[in-house]
Image 1: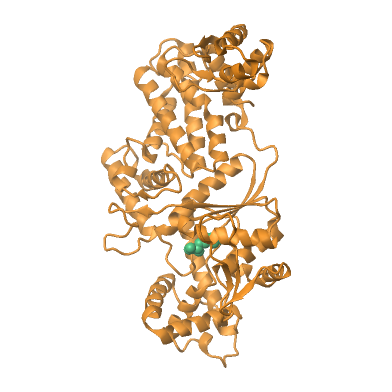
Image 2: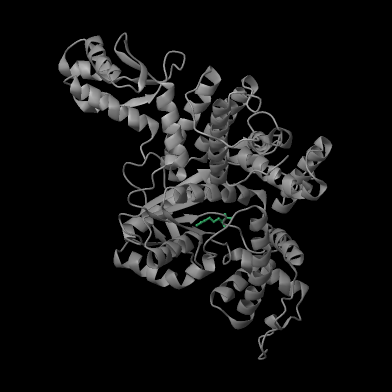
Length: 583
Ligand code: ARG
């Protein structure tokens, strides 16, 4: 189905052609002067240059042709050569009616769907999931849903950090704490126990302790490096313990992501890419891209036209250890082999942009991925606290995601208990839904690259540009529809400015989603759904819906608000949250 601007563009193109001009000048957009008209076309201004005549003459001629079409209430030429267009109420209602019956409210799926590997989440095993990983999960989940909405095949891969020095640190610390564990006994020949030797809270305590110790205690740091190497060589004991650590940590991660409403199709990690390290390095060798630098193996990636310095990509340290970049390149080869993607998209902190620049360059030069495969890093900014510094707990520590979610949920629970609108047995579930909306909308409504300040009072407010406000609006519509004693009927031509505005706002859905999709920008959806909620609320405050005595009119209102609700629910679903029945 064509979007409304596409439809009107097609009419304008026909009119340009009928008036004797190139149809290509007929591009129509939403008016930037809504006080004057609904849509505009500036093509006559450009056409005037080609045809060497006055823009107004062209605009007049085209307007006349457009007026022959019953769809326009006005089609007027305006100095110096604009075409100002306003649809009839019937034409607008007819478009909305088509929209209401179309799949995805008229959004056309991609003609050639892409296979996309989406790399998001990126938690590190045995480290507590903290808010640094929150943004990647929230943005990634939304991007996944947007790409799928347009018919693409998306493989969401969590890309666990499960193989680097952090694992060596944990193993070293575990040995200090529990030297008698069979995993550390080189002479142990039995089967390793089924039961993991640590709980998740123990594990989470081990990592920070180990990390701190390694900074002051050189012998300990050396031990951690040694464990990393032994693990990477898959030495029996360390490898078996690593497997147990993975088991405990993954169960916890699954629970946490589920709690956040974020899911993945593949739970692969750095460790899974290790078998691809050698073939990946072979490709680099084949093309003679790598050089030795102080014993390390590096690939220079600087180009002549670079405006800034891009240091070489280090693939192997002098002690033979591989690095983050090595693993990412091996992972690309793995993804190429397994999924043959058209696009690999990384949703990772923008502070890693140099890393991705280096890795992408190496991948291209070495042909690790096909030339046609797009590689993109969407780098996001930091979630800050009120002090403008990365968000911390009140005690100044790293905020755990679980705790953050619990705090927001408690805050919201307090509000809804006070309002007494939700049945007791529903309070927890509803509070959770509102908390998710607050957290996710608070994040996604910012352009991803920007830092933002996490402010619970603002994010969780029921009024203003917030997730809860959107839910509140949807719930308001649900309640009207539930109280209506008659069914929605046919959409009708609008009679008031508020009704027209609501209908026009709804009509932009497909264009707005397409813009969000093309730019991979959930914030575009946020801005749109917020505007739509505002348009509905203005309509609601100026219109008696349920007490409208004219039955056909009331049925038309019900159809309109039901469409508004469905469109809003689709938008928030693309953002990764949902509305309750009551709040
Ligand atoms: N685990 C990494 C971190 O915590 C993020 C991984 C991002 N994805 C990737 N392919 N490098 O920083």
